[in-house]
Image (cartoon, rainbow, N blue to C red; front, side, top):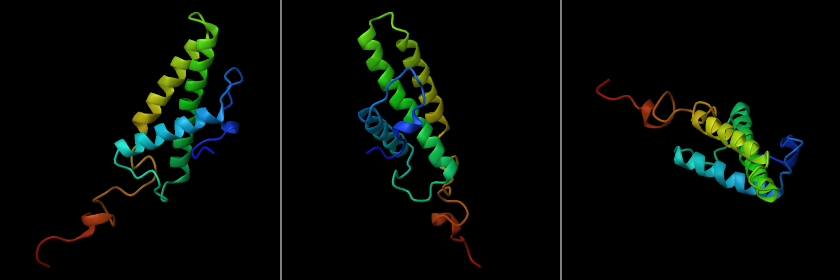
Length: 122
């Protein structure tokens, strides 16, 4: 069972997304979060942040399904264009992911972490 998106979230009528595509997309989302220093299991992700992660998972899963469909259709398949478009969308979404876009407190600012400890003599 996929974590970030379900089959109902994949609405492209031409591309047949499978549960295995969603599972692979979950791995990608977790890798993106980890590479950006964000704990994938963080319970503090906002609703907007979850929607961003869902969109990334859908783009990744749909790109994988389009690639599979294109391989079945040959080199001239229109599915290659769909795959490229979904990969570009996934790249755009990946670049927009950070702690702020997920609604997480920034490390070292405000009441988060060591940033809240006053330094010097009071």
